[in-house]
Amino acid sequence: MYMGVIGNSPEGEILRELAGTRVLVTGLTRDIGVDVARAFADVRCRLVVQTNDLTPDMTALVALLSQSAAELKLYTDPIRSADPAIRFAQGCQQAFGGLDTVVNLQTITREEMRLVASEADVERLITAKLTPLTHITRVCANRMRVIFAEGSILNVLTMPAPESARQAAIAGLARTALAAMTRGEAGQWADQSVRINCIAPRTDVVPQSGAALKSEPDIAALALYLASRRGKTLSSHIFDAEMAER
Image (cartoon, rainbow, N blue to C red; front, side, top):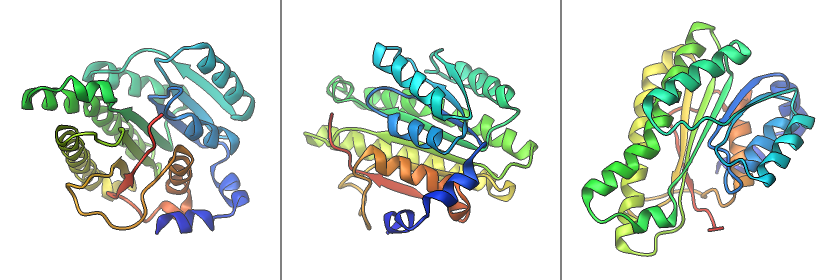
């Protein structure tokens, strides 16, 4: 449903709306986030990028982004727990005097799913993945409230298609936890014009409707749409992702 609306949004209109806006993208790796970061750089945003994946390919990507973005700041400190995530989010706000759009990226890998052997393992895995997203969301939403920014926060959790009932259960629980966090935070900040949405893995556990996001360009298109005026009526939505494994 929403993909058709995104496709009808003129590129020039998005460019005019988002040029110069302040955008944070966290969790960038060579496998996730490249198209998202490039999409915002290409419309001349002021971009803050966080990555722990400082490979030669990532260094080349950052150089490419700096040529397109109106301004680029790179952070490489890990943000795997609450306190580092909070300090990082506070520092990013200071870099540009606030943020207009935040896209947090997180992935559960096939190997991480294979290491799960108990309910406690599942809980630890999901907590580790969602804790940074939750705290960055709260810090950034609060700052948006203070500076009266009508901001967009999009939390993205991707994972490969389950190969077993155990992996399907992990996917279902991760989706449920992310959906609950998204709806809770969206409700908390709704009267402050801060919109919070998420992209979660499609599972058979929850009945689905509509098309799923199939690729990273789809995720990038949705992130641009939510950041634009056309997305200002959308909050607390859980969008489905059904990504091909790389």
